[in-house]
Length: 232
Image (cartoon, rainbow, N blue to C red; front, side):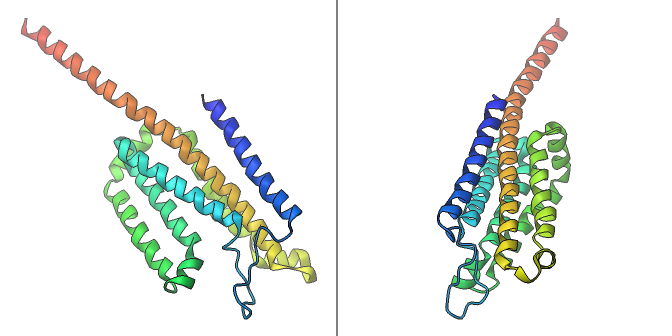
């Protein structure tokens, strides 16, 4: 039942958020929002933070779910390919620090292009199927939550996490960790919404896929019945 799933979403998000905040309160610095990887490192990194690790795990889950939809729900494949490609591109962007540090600098940019370009081309070439897929599934709670997550990630978090804003608010007491913590936690709730939207979209796509063969079989039976009636 849908209300049970939403209750579980609420409990899971509340528990993870509570655990992260209590961990930092009990063990200051455990969120690792500012880790210096060397003695000469003045800026530090937050890439080792549990918050960012959870964000990466969510993106892997979203990409996997969209891959499942693309394989088993053909009518929703254009939408699933687009959002699955976006999830993979965002994952690469979240892991840019590790690509730059341990492999080749700016490698993540090339990987994003390699992943995003086929998804965009596929979506453009199948734009009519995309319109049909949207028409079949809309209104969709899952796509609505995906949109809400995108608004938080690409509009709200980027604006509120602006360094100059926090320098203006805090003044001389400004600490980059404050701005970073706010931005990362806002991004986390955006990714939570993205994950819930992906799961709900998958449930809806599965329901459509299960209904379609029944409708097709019903049409074939009606056609056979009509043809048999016409012979006599």
